Image (cartoon, rainbow, N blue to C red; front, side, top):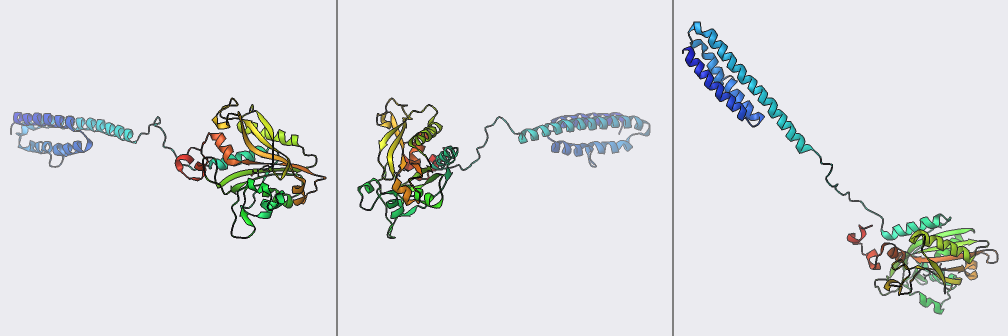
Length: 345
Ligand code: DAH
């Protein structure tokens, strides 16, 4: 083979190799091309080996040309390898990248039931006045639920509480949290500031505002010189903390066998703010609890001397307070355990 032929073949191989290198789309393709031209059985390698077939005087020149081509091809491959590696790194980083502007994935967390939340809020407010939380049993005796609260057997005031009786004679499901007053009076000594939250039961036809199962919070304060105006002041503080600092309040005369005098405590309607609407029966007021001065008979039944101590008590419906707080219009939602309702709190 003469030098010209050798040179022509070199030129063709170089052109083909450089074009291939430029066309290699990824590192694998580039590696494949590298071994095709420069590997042990590569085409360029084979051509370099054929230098022995060239006349001896032309060999140095042929060697120079061949080395120049190999170097050019190797340099092109190195440059291409670097470029492809940079592109692949960029692609990988792009694939792994996090976008901080994407909305977060919500974490599924439980939360307190709205009734429990309200019950805790009530305890928190009265807690600031020194009230301590107690709990009484849900199954009570007729004596504790009624008789010791100045509601004798066969007394017409029993009609205020439609009662669910148990098979066990003399035992019933408590109709209110008031028997807790007797438990606390018998278990502790004055001064007493007690709060008694809990579940109550009545023989009721169920509708949007009545359940056979509902919740109350009872309050009891007993000390020397406790008055009705202490009760009024305390309930005002409560109403303001629960429904807003400028919420109007009033006492109305009421009747309960275990308090004398008895009152109903109203707040300005939380829906219409007092102008009158269907929610408040157009009166502008909503009754949120019953209260009064603890009847001397009840104090005595609790083992407390009414000549020395006076006290007041109040009882509120946790369901009703919660409905007013959150604008809920049907009390049945509380015990249906529907997550679509519960997850809003
Ligand atoms: N126990 C009453 C009821 O269930 C509510 C109540 C009224 C509780 C007056 C009291 C009170 O402590 O003084 O209707």
